[in-house]
Length: 493
Image 1 (cartoon, helix red, strand yellow):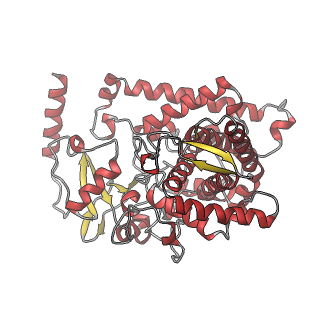
Image 2 (tube, one colour; image 1 turned 120 degrees about the vertical axis):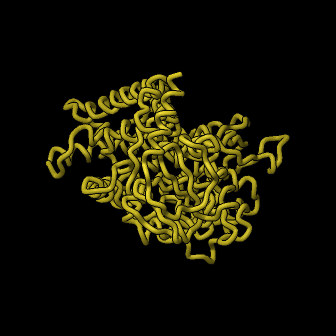
């Protein structure tokens, strides 16, 4: 009964508000109050939205409760939003999970556009994730790659099928933990379990539905459903986790082995102590949060997708392995590092083709319009949420020949890159809100993938063939392969 009264009052509220008529992009007709929420497929939203584009075109509108939504699904319009009119579309919506887990928008990912965002972006770009800083992380990254190769080598002697997806997730999480926090949680069963439990719950919350994000005065419904209690508990658990990490770094008895490499927490504490910037421990926790959630599994997902496509395409696998192994042999060390990869054209093409077909975040992080704008002749109102469907752009037949086919060769004669200047391929976004972790993410992916291909020969398990290796995906912000990639492996001598 309370629900009925609430929605009747809400409908009356909407009718009392008179908006000036404007030309909105086309889109499916919604229902009163809830708009298009009942139609939305949250399991694979990028696929659902790409299907809508076939009817309504490359820019379409939806409404989730009281919130207007615009979806962009072409490189031309993406360039308009992320470059030409970037300043009009570079804010973030104030959504309850974003605000809670980022300590009120104190991190670079969810801070609304303004003076604070510009300051925190400067900290991230100059002090935390610059090319120089990423180079300083190289010894840790190479050590983690060596650990991964050693683990796979030991498993190869058993002639059993190995779960490569699981191994790569461990590699990626160890990388991020060492770089950001100075710890390897994989070394301790209890710590590893706690780490992954926190990560999984935080990521699940980012796709959870909260009434208060779409309907005014409905926070009581989130409390009634238990969603708010779930969010509050996760926030407190994460806060305690970050508090422990910071305390360990401040501890004067910190062992010398823990201090060999300066990690991101070290850098932030140094900036705080030097009073280079006015920020508190909550700022440090917020920055740690976005690195923890956004950086942990995206690299693993991309290496899994690259290996999946190479296993399904034997000719591409043969070409890239020959290129990598020839380069390693010429170097005379049996392996190659970050600087060696820059000149390997086919390997680079494999990475780009993987980003095109399987972007880690198929719907780029949501933008919000700051003021009234016009896109393609349509009026976009302030506070409109804007989604860029990178998955659909990467499979646009107007741009890509045979878009659903894995063909690294398409990039050999192409200047298109993923660094935010070519809007046909923007897995890291573009403009003011482009992901500042691009250099670190790409280095993680390339080092792991290159070494997997150099040191081992990979085969499909007995009884299967290449077409049996599926490309189904799991729900979530990061696009993970639904079924783990399980392969036979033997060392390459």
